[in-house]
Image 1 (cartoon, chains in turn cyan, yellow):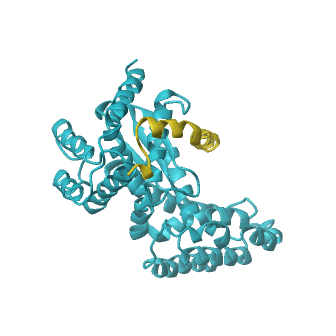
Image 2 (cartoon, helix red, strand yellow; image 1 turned 90 degrees about the vertical axis):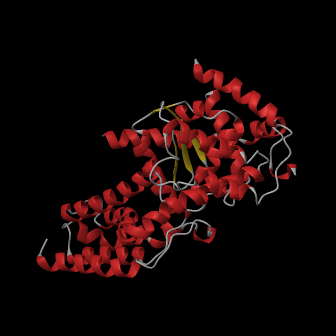
Image 3 (cartoon, one colour; image 1 turned 60 degrees about the vertical axis):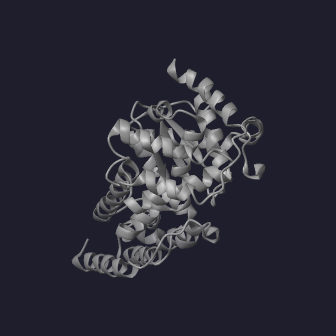
Length: 322
Length: 40
């Protein structure tokens, strides 16, 4: 690669970095469906560059890549992009765990609760349906990846004491998905780098599957930076305000689905007692109080059904003990 | 190679979830637990 091509690429990176700082992500706008296809016209790129790609990375193909990256950088991401971001994050996360089979009683039960809750959320329908994955681990945790992939450990299933408490945990994670917290956090800090996730596909197409080594390295390193940030947020919590917002959404989502929304307070207080904190540095010190304040603003559901829910919770959890 | 295996793992779960008909079990699940948006 000559110096002029390098300069062209770095000028692009610099200018697009400036142009993207003001853009925000939005999951709620379903009008963005198919944005990936709209942004990256890969067929067009392939046909235009097929001749030059046989000779390697030419100035023409470099310009096409730069133009594509520029278009991507100037576009907002939608549900499709969030799904692929979440899929990548989930793939990395579950690689560290054994997954409880999807057709097991435990997994089906968690999916039933999760699907009940999504109907009471503000984002019941995503690009790909919500998926709830049970991870076989004594770690007490639950994670939400962008695009609706929600993971919960068997340690957390043992930690909660009723279906309504479990609904509170899943409601919190659905709240993260609904509010686009994952993609939003990336957007605030590394919007430019996220575009490379999409652009990577275009680059491969533009060079007929042969990605120039330097470009590939730049893209891989940018992608890793985005994924590191996202994985850190998913594992350790986003920020005090974001986690408080997810708690708030959990209360509204569980309440809308006719669960006892106040159950989340029991779980939060037990966190403090058992773990010594409310979830880690990303969570508010007054987490229980903030949730109590939200609960005061909603009308409580009838307790009808709570006993039956707790009984079936115990039955299903008995499978977990074995 | 490891990346491909990881992707297969998540894709297999996503496919299972997408193909699974959640509606039928959900109806009895909602009724038994007195759940759902319209319960109020």
